Amino acid sequence: MSVLFDEAQLQIADEAQRLLTAHYSGERLKTYLLERGTFDRELWALFGAQGWTAICYPEAFGGLDLGLLELGLIAEACGAAVTGVAALTSSFALGQALMHFGTDEQQSHWLPRLSAGSAIGAIAFAEGQDMLPGAPTLRIEGGRLSGMKPAVTAGGIADAVIVLAQSENGPVLALVDLAQPGVTRSLLDTFDNSRCTADLTFDDVEARELPGATDALAGAREILRLQAVIVSFEQVGGAQKMLTTARDYALTRRAFGQPIGAFQSVKHRIAEDYVLVELARANAIHAASRAGQSDFGLYAAAARISATEAYDGVSRDAVQVHGGIGVTWEADLHLHQRRARTLSVETGPLVFWEDDVITQLQGTAQ
Image (cartoon, rainbow, N blue to C red; front, side, top):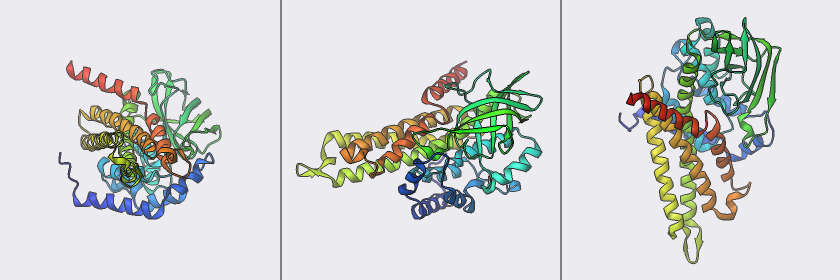
C-alpha cells in the first residue's frame, strides 16, 4: 500500500491535532491522576461531537463507515496529547466484538450508543498474567455470570463489558450490562488513574453470550489484535511527541559552551529513537491496511511490539535528555512515561505479542 495519506485522511489528522491542542493540556491530565475513578468527560463529549467515536461503525448505526487507519490517526493525535480518556480504544474493542459476533438485537441496542459516545465499553478477557485463559475462572451458567475479572481498563466507568467466561461447553464470549445489581467495581490505584482501571466482580448477574463467537478464544484474540493496532497508533503519537521534545531541548540547552545535542551520548540516542518511531509508525500503518486479510494477525502483533518498544524507550530517553528536570512533576515528561508504561501492559504485554508472532510464523511455515 501507499504510505501517503489521501486528502481526507490528512484533514482528519490535522483537525484532531488542532482540537486537542486547543482544548487539552497536560495540566488537565494531572487532575485525573490524583483521584481514582475520574476521567475527562468534557473531552470525551468532544470526541462524540466530532464523530471520532463513530469512525469504525456502519452508517446504519450512526457511524461514519471508515476504517482502522482513520481511527488510528485520531488515536495518534490522542497519544501525542496524552489525553485523559481511555475509552476510545476500549469502546472500539467492545463495538468490534458486537459487530463480529453479536446478535441483531445486541448490535441495535449498543452500537448506536457507542457510535455517539453516549455509552462506554470495555473488554475483560485476561485473568492475572494470562491474557486469554483456556479455562476462565469466571463462570456462566443459564445466562447468569459469577466471578471476577481483574484490572479491566475503563472498568470503573464502562456501561457494558465483553467477558471471556467458562460455560459447561467451554469458553464463551458474553455481553454484560454493568448497570445491574450484582456488579461491583473496585477501582485500582495505578500509574495512570485516568485509565479508570477496576476489578469487576459479578454475583449471579445476567449475561448474554455472543452466538457468533463459536471459537471464543480465537474470537477474543481477533478483537485484541484489532484493539492493538489502534493502541499502536496511540503509542506512536506519544513516542513522536517525546522525540520532538527531547530534540528541541537538546538543541537549546547548552553546556560547556555548546548545545547538549552536540554530544554523541545525546545525539546518537535521539537518532536511534527516531528510527524506533518511524519503524513503529510504518508497522502501525501497514497493520491497519491489512485488516480483514489472512495475514492481519501477524502485522497487528508486529505493530504492537514495535510501538511498545518505541514509546517505552523514547519516553525514557526524553527524561534522561532533560536531566534533573526530567523527573519533576512540573516538566510533564512523567505524563508520557506513565502512559507508556500503562499502554505497554494494556492489551497484552510484549511477551504475549512476541509469542503470537512466533506462533503465526510457525503456522505459516507449516
